[in-house]
Length: 210
Image 1: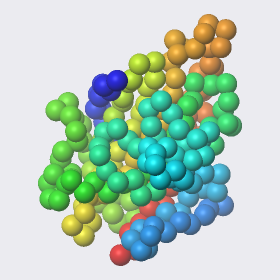
Image 2: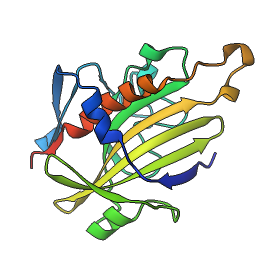
Image 3: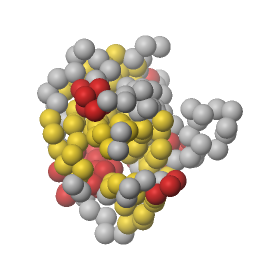
Image 4: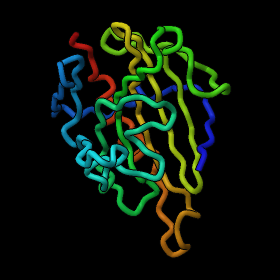
């Protein structure tokens, strides 16, 4: 099924990190130590365990959703890291999955393409941000697919002739995805901010090592 995309301004996700700070952090370095992420210890590392099914992320209970949170459908990039929020904390709610992901988009070899091509003619309200000295172009994408909706807070940077994308992705189910008796509870504003805060901490914990 083809997803529909609407692009709006990306505001508030980095400020959420300051509202929900976990002092206990873990550190993960990419192969070759190109970049490093410091992230809250409650986030779960998603991995490819099935070589024949590269779109399947494990553990599926926290890494999978109808609208993917590790493989953002807004690009065809190579996903290098994915850290998921433990969705079981909000079992029975609309939350399907939420994650922070890092991708390298090899199809964009020029800086202008990386920072200006957002996969839709509707891209608007882009703005610049900075994380640990890394300059980023940011946008917010709202995606709908059938009975599911996702928010993607997207950040792009061009580093050493490569295009990198950092995503905070939150996927939820609409009421009509369930039978009336199984209708999920809506997340409260405080619960949404808690999820965003943990993922924004991972975003703020990103830095290039090379």
